[in-house]
Image 1: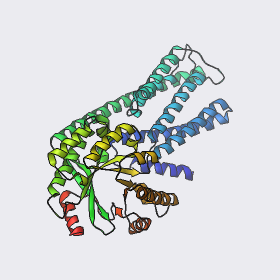
Image 2: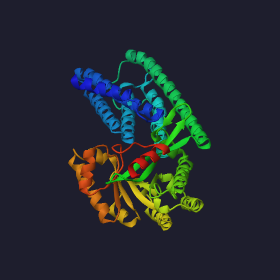
Image 3: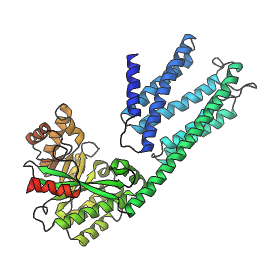
Image 4: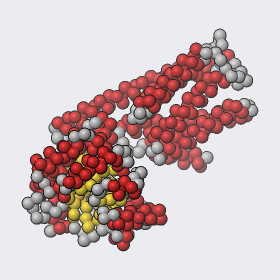
Length: 453
């Protein structure tokens, strides 16, 4: 009972959490959590019911429901969305098909009804696998529809040992038909609402680009002497109704729709504009600006040409410009990546590898790419003092970067103890809330005057 109470408390905590995910993502997360609880409760209740009657074949199906519910719950907690959805839909399809064949054979008095749940399941698949490859999204939905047609048109059953009596099934057919149609209606409504939300977000993002609603904040990067050596540009959206929105509210959607390319170009223009403005100011001219480059943006065929045009137009010291790449990007098309990086390095642009240690890059990639800096991911810094694995990883990354002639900067430094550990380990560049949160331009300039003046 204690374990069940803890499970329910955790469920409610997640249900009401006000994270920064998009509305659709929060809704899908809640639906997965709810589905996991339904599987747990239904599997437990029916498992006890059929155990008392010695119907062991159905008990095995109930055990499968319980295991699936726990699996979906744990995967959802770990944000492993694809694995949670695959497990949930795979088991749901098996259970619905199994119950239809074993418990619900058609008769003149009571037709099959359990297979009707495959229709709302098909609609749910379109939502759950929205961001997956088309073969997966539509493959699961089509499989549900095909099974629905096959089961509805067939009277075959592998055994009648578990078949319910017609008087029970007549009532059940009405109840299941109503329940399945209600589920279908609700899911179609959610699907339509979600499409409307995405359309609104698309429209608002286009308006934001046109009306310059985006702003950039600067998170200072400091050396061991406390001097500001650079800053990372972080985009924010000054939404006219919702206020200042962090990138987690819109960047993922921009990536999926292609709007990340003009948004990324706008951020680069802000960096170039500021670097040019600082070129003649002794207090700021040595400060570097780091800009995150998305996968779609870097893969664009015109990226190098667009960068060259900006360099020629603004005439900045390109040594002060740093482009941050992710590990996911560098493992996908290494040859194209090397060509583009080499062309920009010739113009003086520097590259850093962001969130190093969280992806799948190999030492051979690091050796071949013209990287100037490694950035240690904040996930390692946050528990470097309490977790021996994180401590080992951080020390290794620092030694690796130094041995390869790269600078190393630690992100997410929040305590003086973390800073001291990094200093003793050989890292002397830092970024994090211990020093400063991301700041608007005027506040960043004031911070530089305070630290470097």
